[in-house]
Image (cartoon, rainbow, N blue to C red):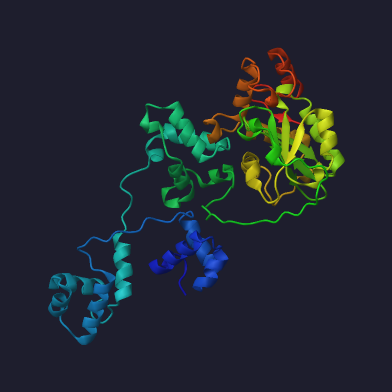
Length: 423
């Protein structure tokens, strides 16, 4: 049974084909008759990134030519006769046979493996991260701040537009982290990635069911104002609960235009009344210009949505069942949140202080959709921008506060430049 580094090229190709189809390591092992550990060790060694296929020079013998050489030896043919059959010089055939053990020990597949092994050469060129210590230190610093490779690459392009030596692609950063042979970055830095993985995983698709009961008086997302759907007007939020054990959860509302998020710890109960009170206490600390609507999943925790709307002036809209793309920004931010609150760990022990720290990290994280600015920067820019009249009456939601009133409201809810909104 093949093991580890002795997998044949055909078996390796089959592993990558099945992995691209979303197969797990255990499933791939069963299909190919390999232990799961063998598949895992191979993928770990290459960092989950398929190596480039080797190229064979035309002057080298192919596997088919080596098999014909083996058959010629079995017939007792001379090197000249085998060379004439292959269209090769007889000295090429002689060197091939002598190099691989002579006539008595020559085997085509063993000769093929030996040829590929001898053809390996150490890399003659270094990557940008190896050649430029300053660039490498900047990348390490940003990774240490929990920034992802793609925003790091974009930040470098923006910060050093005229210096190609200080720019690097996100794929190069991933390869430096994952592929040990090109490990110019320490493997330990992978724990700062959002997923914390030490090898690249194949994309897998899963369909999770959703079965909450019907909530009375729901207003569906199709009736939401146009200004909320196209993000033209700030103050429209979307959110859900991050559920844990022992009836604990974290509410995660997110402002749609700036992607600015709140984390509201609910350590004791997820019933409708405590959730309504926690959301109300948080959202009423915001300036009026930042509280127009809230879009939520059809969960029983929002059964008190009517009372919430009356007491806060924030209209609540509900998504369609099994339609997470209707809250796309929120789903993306929840993926980022899983770096700090993994699925394997319950949020039951998360305190309000830790929720504030995690919210600050998320809001200080550059987002590609914001032109590599942070949600905190976008929100500060929004508050400091001179207030203008709303474009139409149906998009207005109460009087616009003055600049001083807006800043007062932000201070009241614990927000300063680069800070975090928390409940």
